[in-house]
Image (cartoon, rainbow, N blue to C red; front, side, top):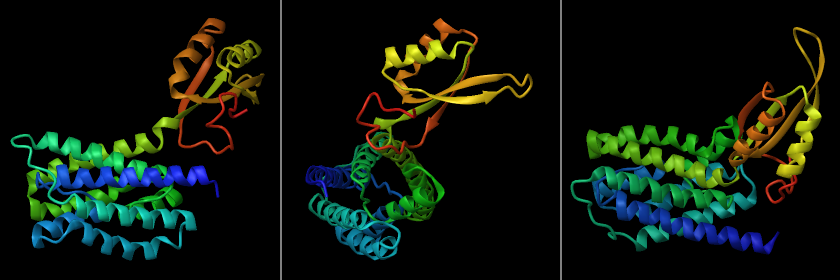
Length: 285
């Protein structure tokens, strides 16, 4: 096991757990908002019985780990247990930290979503989870190909609908805003920093496009053999995966060489290739 990587992952879990706890105790609970998943159930029990969110969070999540351990590696499970312990401790320590943001529940909902989403995103980026619905979201990611944010959003909606009977319809609607923002932040933290875009190029001057992209963008290209469905003409199809920010540069290169080139662009969920993210010269080719 890489010691530096493990140390970095543990630091991400610690920081993420603290931010997550502050989001719950500083923004959500003081403004009588709920959340989705297990933490939503935890918050509702706090409203009903004044139970400690940290203790309830720990009990419920440890129970769910018994389900998740069968589907994940030992590393993920250990990281998840660490995330559960730390988030529960920080929830307990930061209890009653926040104050109600008077007359601006929307602002509270936005900051609750930002902080909770950032905290969970950092935990997910380490390779672990915070337990609860996060385990179910990771299962959806593995089995259905859903993004983690999408999986949690679906689960969260079900819990929030139920919590509406406790916190009221208006607060539940604000909670939906918070959870939606949180889901987007999670995806941004987990996937956004390495977001990739796949590009297919059909040009009458494929060699020139290939040379310009290779030399000017330090990107390699995969050359595929293609055939026109109508004309039957043989042609070369260029395929490459780049950062989303590089799209504008690529378009300018193609337009200068062949303004009539046929180009399709689509998002890439993830790139599996050792060294890809760390090297500018590694590509699909």
